[in-house]
Each structure stands twice: as C-alpha cells, then as structure tokens.
Image (tube, rainbow, N blue to C red; front, side, top):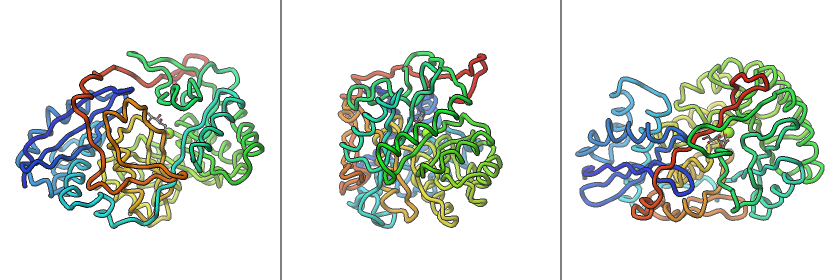
Length: 408
Ligand code: CS2
Ligand code: MG
C-alpha cells in the first residue's frame, strides 16, 4: 500500500478550516486538520509547498517513521505552523490505518477506558443575568461542566464573552469580531481581579456547589496576579483555572503553585512536549490543554499524555470551534482511550461547518463519544466546501487602558 495523493483544502463554512486529505493507491482516504486560527494559509502553504510531494509513494502504515521524517527531516523544529502540518499528516495516517483495520481509531490506541468523555461548554454573558441564562441553556443541552466568562465593569468588550448568549444565534463567536484586520479590545487587570471572584460567588449561590466550573484567564496575568486570583477563587472550588500566565516561562508557575490550590490548566498555544517539561516534571499544572491539531497529532499527544500520567496530570484537550471536526474527532478517540483523561472542551460547530464535515461523534448526557465508524469517523464534502471560500479573519488585539498592547 502506498500514498498516491495528498491534497490540501481551505474552506470557510462559518469560519476557516484547513484540511489535508491523503489517498492511498487502493483508494483509502484519511483526513487531518491543519487549522491555525488567523494563520491558516501559512499551514496550507507549508503542506502544499513542502510536505505533500514527500508523502507520495510512502507506506501510509509507517506513522511513527513519517512523523520523525517530517519533524527531524525539516531540521527546523517545533512552532505552531510546523506542528499543525505534521499533526495533519499524522491524523490522516491514523485515519487510514484504522479504516484499513475496520476499527474506530480508539481501538488502535488501546480501546475504550470509559463509556464517554466528560465535556465542558462555554457559558458567558456580559452581565450576571445573561451569564445565568447561558448557564441554564448549557444545562438544558446536557452539559455537566461549564466554563464561565463574563464582562468586566468599565470594559466595553471582553474576548470569550459571546456577542449573543443564545446557542445557535451566534454560537460560533470566536474571534469576538471577525474581520480582515484584528479588532482591538481593552483590558484592565485590576478591574478583572476585583470582579471575577464576585461572579463565581454569584454562580455558586445560584447553581449550587456540585457543578464543575472552569475559567480561562487567557494569559493576561503576571505570576503574582495569577496567584492572587487562584487564591481568591478557592472558595468556589473550580475544576480549573486556565492559562493564568503566558507560560512560555514555565518557571513562573512555581510562584502561582506555591500560593494556591486552585487546579491549573495550560497549553492551548503549546506545540510540543518540551513546552511542558518543567510544568510536568515539577507538577506545576494539573491539566494539559494541547490540541491534537497544534501539537503534532495523535502520535505526539499519546506520548505527551503518557508523560503527564507519570505525574498524575490529566488531559483537557483544546476543543474550540477553530479546531475542525476532524481535529475534534481525533481528540475524542484519544479521550476515550487514555487512562489519564480529565475533561474535553466542546464548543459545538455551526450547522454550515457540520454540513461540510459529516461527523459520527455524539454528545449524550454531557458525555462525548467518537462513534464506531472505522477510522476517525469524519467525511469531508469537497464540493460543498468549495462554496465557502477562504475569508480572512483575525483574532483580536488587546490593549491596556493606556494603549499598551497586552495579552488577550
Ligand atoms: C480559548 C480558545 O477555548 C479556549 O480555551 O482560549 O477559544 C482560543 O482563544 C482560540 O482557540 C484561539 O484560536
Ligand atoms: Mg483557552
């Protein structure tokens, strides 16, 4: 069996996605997600101009060898563009291997360790009333764990707070304002730090102590600010506080960790296990947030989770709507199979996205399941995809009130 074709598709059914399709000489097709929000065409070019021709004629079953060939062979290692491209190849090859075996992919990863993957959804509202409506709507949909984001008094908009809280109306809300140039938002950390604990207090009073609650700090705090927030949130028993600091400086998490028992999750912008080396070996975090799409695919993620498991650190795979259904399906197969599963982010794609990508995963009583279709269980409708051409859209830029550019 040999790879005979490798094609890259860019489409925008609601938002932009990059998909790699690998076809074998006996007609088996595998898909991989190569979407990098706001930098989609860079990954498409990396694949088209530097990778697809190298795949032709290779044995699709040699997944580890192909991974090492692309990672080491390029000489230039790591980085989000490279690792998204490698991930797409890796996931497409796993899709092919599982289809040839006639098994859902999770069976090749060791089989199911659980009946389904606990998912969390994004509730948000600019004020408490809108937030409570959004939480209720998520509970009605069956979510058993909920991320909470709100507006901050004095700021006009905050990234991660939906323009409309009604699912279906404008659920696919990130970036908050999609435009050909990044929109600009304002930020005030002191106002945020004062406000967030009051929000969690109100949510606990309204919804009780049991519901697992999460919060995303989006890299906006310094270590001492993050320590302060983690400590202030302890009475509200968070499932996790995400991306409290820009964790390129892994050592910074020592300070946060010394001050708070609020569980910490980090890693959606990381792309290799090396980004976690100190965080994992010193047990400075509790959850690994990488996306399969941005961290080298299933091969690399399986190794990363096995490494994390040695330190009782669990998974919390990144699953926003800028991960395509192909990337989301890959995550669900891992979630079902690995022992140290923690939680899976599940934002739900728009109806247009789900017409182009036909999925076989399900969401029942708060649990996701990848389904029993051989392979990943996602089909890509090429003809329909062509009706949604690439639409430049960027994530926002954040500025402090004095105009200084800040993390968002
Ligand atoms: C967010 C993401 O899901 C999350 O936790 O941080 O929505 C993130 O902002 C986007 O994926 C960026 O592309
Ligand atoms: Mg996040």
